[in-house]
Length: 395
Image (cartoon, rainbow, N blue to C red; front, side, top):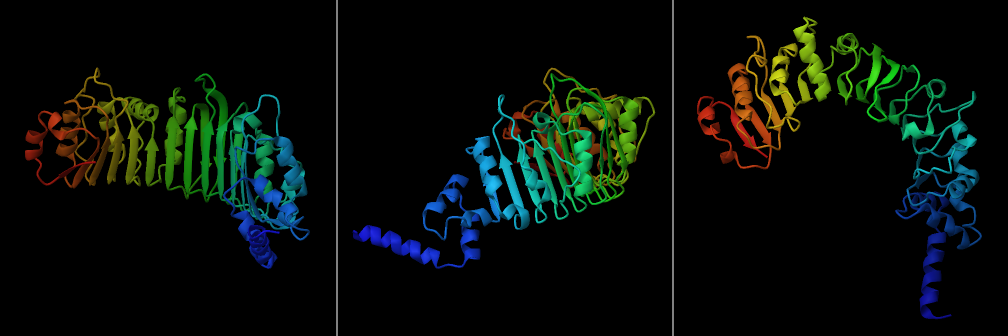
């Protein structure tokens, strides 16, 4: 036996002398593939079954073979008592559909579960009493039904975070949970078509809600604790009455993010005297292709402190209609900061800035998130001389 082999065996012996708990923690933190963890069985008799009690595994995209993963999970003794975090990320397959093993549903210690392209078949006896976070990515491929979701929520009374993206909704879909605090739902993009179903949510302790996609009906039945909401309708707006009711149900939020479709719905509501004032909103982020219309609806947010305007959908062939941009005298009285994200360099921005400066009496700064040269905006220096109390910052 040469010197290098003796050195390797000596290192192995020193590692084997460590307590099982420490070795298991080292194995669970290995940055390499799970295959390398399983291969430790060949090191010695002591290591033969040691990997089966590792408290945490991360199945990454390189471990895409469903048979391999099925075998690992079948032998993983720790799943029954010790596993707290489990992430399974698979590649999409047209020929093989992978189902999570049934023993996963009786894992009493599980607190965090993340599945990607991994189907679930939940029976009646699910025991996820400690589960705090559940992520189902590519839920459109694994077909999470309304019945399955109801069983999940009943089996996880302590669930605080739920992420479903993208989700295929073909029937009325309800999420009912007294423990949920963070909810993110992204509907799948099916040829840019609207989903003719109702998405209903009852979550009295919900703090953050993020939604993206197009659905005919969305109803937040009871979310009195909600503080932060994102509404990202992409292509097809819901009926105006549905959107009105949705805004009314979240009128107490403090942070609100709205897509371009939502901004145009707000303008349509105001034109039809369907006026909702969201008195608690302090931070508003809007994406818009109609800057004048966006300005026109800002008086719906009378306590607004920070405005983040993403104008990247505003094209140079559009005009700024000053009639649409009129604001009431009570608008923007509390506005202090305006963030503008815009990739164009054009004088079209000047009427927008002028309207903001004329109405925001306590405005402290306007931040341009734009890599262009301020000198390329003709008329900007002259405009700024009239409002020297406001800082202009380019990032």
